[in-house]
Length: 161
Length: 325
Image (cartoon, rainbow over all chains, first blue to last red; front, top):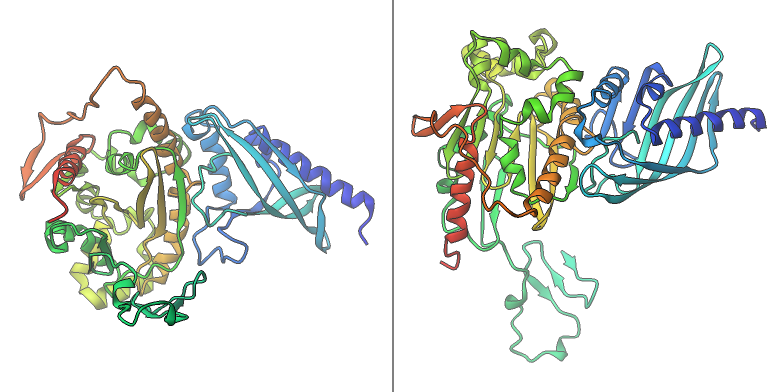
C-alpha cells in the first residue's frame, strides 16, 4: 500500500501540471518533462503509436517544437489562448517500479474556443502518466491522453491537453 | 449478410433484400427486388481510389479525371509495388466553415508564410530551402482542368536533384530497402527521378487532397460546417518510408498538428467574415496578368489564385449541370 505522503506528492505534481495546461504556461510545462519524454494522444486506448496514426505523438524534440510554435506569437489557433478549466479525479497509482510511477486519472476539461467560433468544447478521458524521480524531483516521462471521442471528428487541440 | 435490427429484414452484401420475416403479411406478388438498398449510381476505381457518385455525374471517371490521372500516378508510383496500402487509420477533424474553404486553401500558396508563420519559426523546414534557392526552378501552381489543381513543388525538387529532399531531407542511406526495391521495380534512372521528384500536392475535384504523403478528403455537414479526414499515404512494399510518414502526418495534419489547426481557425474566421455583408464578391484575381499556358494547362507563380479560379469554374459548371440526365 502506497504511503499517503507518496500519493499526495504525485497528486500535487499532477494538479500542477494540469494548472500549467489550463493557463497555457508553455515553458513551465515543458520544464516538467524528462529528456526522453513522450506526449501521446492516440485515437483510442488500444492503438499502437508506431502503426496507427495518432492525434498527437510527440517525442521530446517535438514537445520542444510544439512549445516553440506556441510561444512564437503567431500560433493563430491559440491566439488568443483558450480559457480552460479541467477537473482531475483522485489519482490511481497503477504501478510502481523503483523511482517510476504509473498514475492514472480521469479528467473533464471545458475549453472556450475564443479564437473563432466562441463555442464551448467539452473534452474528457483518461490520462496515464509515467512519472520519474530525477535528482529527487518528480518529472513527466510520458503522458498518454485517451479521449472519449478520439475516433470521432473533433475540433482543434492546439492547446496543451 | 446484414439483418436490420428493427423488423429483421435480411440483406446480402450486395444490398439485395433476401428475406422478410412473417411473409404472410405481404401479398404473394411482393417483389423483394424492389426493396434492396439503394446503390450509388456510379462507382469506378483508378489505381485503388474509389470514386462514387450517388446520383450520377453525367461523365465517366476517365472524363472527370482527364489529365489529372498523372497526379494520382505521381503518388502511387512512389510504391515499388505501384499500390497504396492505407492501414494507419484516419484522423477526423470537424470545423465550422464551408467545405469549399478547403480546396481553396489546400492549393493556395499565398497564405503559407503568414498563416503558418509559427511552424516556420519552430521548425527547420525544407520548404524554406526550396523557396530561398535562387538557382532552383521555382514552385508553381497549375490548373489541370476540370477543377483539379496543384502546387507543383516537384519541379523545384527536380531541379535541385537531391534524393528525398521532399521527405524532410532524409538521407537515402536511411532508406536502403526502399531504394533497392524502387530500383528493382523501375530501374536505376526512373527510381532516381521518383526519389527527387516526390509526391504531389494536389486536389482532385471536388474533395480529394493528395497532400505530400497524406491522403485527405472532406465532406460537408452543413453550409457552414465540415469534416476533414487524414491518413498517411502508406506505400505498399515500403515500410521504411511508412514508418517516417506516419509521424510526419501527425506533425503536419490533424486537429493537434502544427499546420491544419491554423488553416481551420482562419477558415472559421473567414466564414464569420462572409456573413458581414457589404461586399458581394471575394477577389480571386491574383496572378491573372502573369499566368500562362503550358501543355494545355494554366500555370502561374506559386502564390497566384490560378488554381482557385479553376476550382470555381468547375464548381459553377456542376451547379448548372442538369444532373437528371
